[in-house]
Length: 280
View 1 (cartoon, helix red, strand yellow):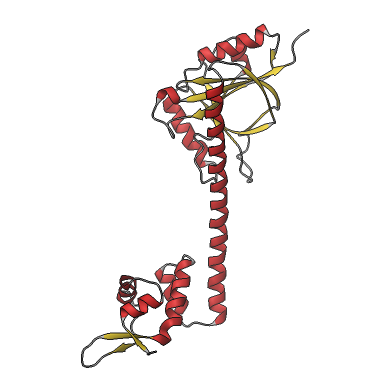
View 2: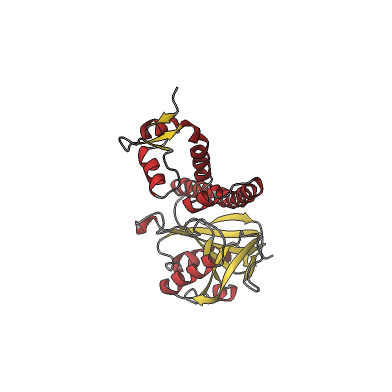
């Protein structure tokens, strides 16, 4: 055993690269303890192991080099404890964000797998009845009529959310088609953009629409977002022919979009129209 260590030996002991040690030397964070007067060669001391280990730990906690330097300046327990508490709070916030991101991605994967399975089992333009719970939708105040307004509207909605994962391709983004427009079959009327609401914080006043729970006549459609007339016609015909009544506004929900495919033939949305019991 020896006290003086070369840069390679110190790097190996602490499982760092020699370039990392040279960088720490250049920025005056961690410098060799000894200099040979005859050769000018510099050596680290084994007694510096604690400093280098602490630097490594602080860097793993996410401290930048300036924060690490501050940590070592006039060290005492209360100062070190305060800095560690501050960094711990940052880590808790990041962990919460990553947990939320993982959940969002997991839900997106599960949904896309379900959609692709259903597409293999059922023919397009096949109406199905589904039950939904009440859903809170964060809506855009102004109507949208085309892709240009849709793009700006999505940006506005995303800026009102505190989520890390994008809302596209998440089965949460869509537009409301008003009941009166369905009744008159005016399918080209402006629509209200929405995203299903998941934030715990209070949303902007007057911007939440509650889609009622209950039975919906649903149809998955292949094509671009505004190519909805045929699907709406099919659904309205189904509702009329089976004696149901339209019970509220329809939801047109994006399911597969340009965030996960470049193929127009793979783009998909679902139209969901709430229905009442058959009329006697």
